[in-house]
Amino acid sequence: MAAARLSIQNLHKSFSVPVLTGINLTVKRGEIHGLVGENGAGKTTFGSILAGFVSKDNGMITLDGVEYEPSGPKDAFEAGISCAAQELSLINPLSVTENIALRKLPHSCSVISGQELEQRTRSILQRVGLGSLDPDTRTGTLGLAERQLLEFAKSVFLDCRVLILDEPTAALTAQQASVLHEIVTGLAASGTSVIYISHRLQDVLEVSDNVTVLRDGRIVTTAPAGSMGVAELMEYMSGDFQTGNKTARCAAAQTPEPVLEVEHITTEELPHEISFTARAGEIIGIAGLSGSGRSELLNALFGLTPLTGGAISRHSAGEKVRISNPGTAKRSGMAYLGEDRQSMGLYPGHPVLTNMMVPGDLQGVASMSLLDNRREAAAAEKLVEELSVKCDGLDQDIDQLSGGNQQKILIARWLYCNSDIFLFDEPTRGIDVGTKNMIYNLMFDLRHEGKTILFTSSEIEELMAVGDRIFVLSRRKLVETFTADNWSETEILAACFREFATRTPHVH
Image 1 (cartoon, rainbow, N blue to C red):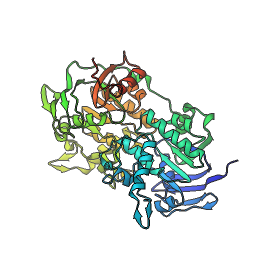
Image 2: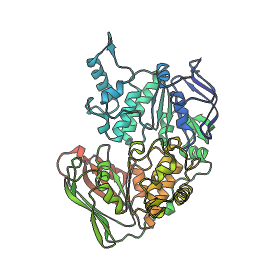
Image 3: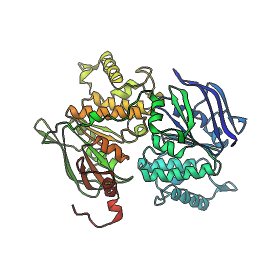
Image 4: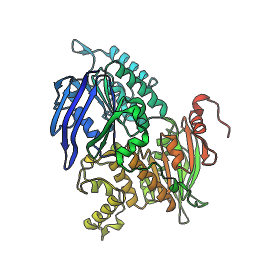
């Protein structure tokens, strides 16, 4: 029998309310241990305690038989515990190399060995599927999937005894996730213990040796991964969760006139002309590999990126408004949800109320240009109830909410604005199956109200389950449009790779 690498006994942690209660868990040497649960179940807090980001309240942790109680991330790292965080820990102004090697730069006689550093950086980048990336590239210029792979590269740059992966594949394609899983399996074979936290339940079952399910901060079961299926995991997680919502999938009546008209647009990041129209009562999914231009397209539609050619027009009440900046987009009833909620939406250190009401339309809560705090709070409370946001009140710091509840707050922000066109970039990234289902139902409800939604996703199955049409981008070119009566996962995936397979123009 393999020796225990980690032993957790009666672990407790509370913030304003209990988050972890009586956690008892053992992880063996070389074991991949999956950890699942709905948002708010305590998964990230558990990983944060092990990684030294958060201190425990009570209980004991031993690492290879020695009591382990880090006072910070530095202690954890020196003890051999490395973490790839869900909310990425990268420093955007630094280069790729600097981020990867920041914790322990190779040196000789107090002089950094530049040649060794470059060699090791290129080697790890190649290993995680970023071999074409220049190590001197500034991290802030990378896409979310590239940054997630970089976070993983940083966590495995040096040998470790325990590797904590918190939603490591949330922004990755299936191919990228497969590469990451191969590396994880290899690390485990060499003796590294891995705690694998993810909402992608099939991934957890395929890569893990054992799986623990958390619900409301308590362990409800721990079992071999091979003894459970996805449906059983979801039952443990939520008790009565039913997958899917087939009745809501029926299409809503669409207006023949466009509400959004995109004519031959180009930007510095989208060099090939893109044209399409979107109608009221329609959900459009946007597919493509990492770096295909999905996020760049939504940024252009909301006016975040200046056009170098073409035009974007919003049609409403017989009027036609050109979209050239976010202010015009918002005033025209457009909403935008960025792919990285931490850097593109949330106001860290501020309460739920502030995060929900910015950039709210104050018409409903203002009187003679003065904010009516009571009406504002009433509106916020209603949205919290409608979206089933788990929080201790409107004054709670947004940082204390789980990722899924933070995402609900960002969506509530735009619902309060009474927007008509929603641009959602990876709206279900890193959230549990229950919250995913809530967001799907919300999208269906908005469509039936005559709203228009354009959303990106790395999961083709999700695009097919929710969308009425699917646009496919390949090498930042719109190469194909699919409708529900003519699509298949194989054809959509083939279109994603089309411009990578040939450099000749595709004839429609």
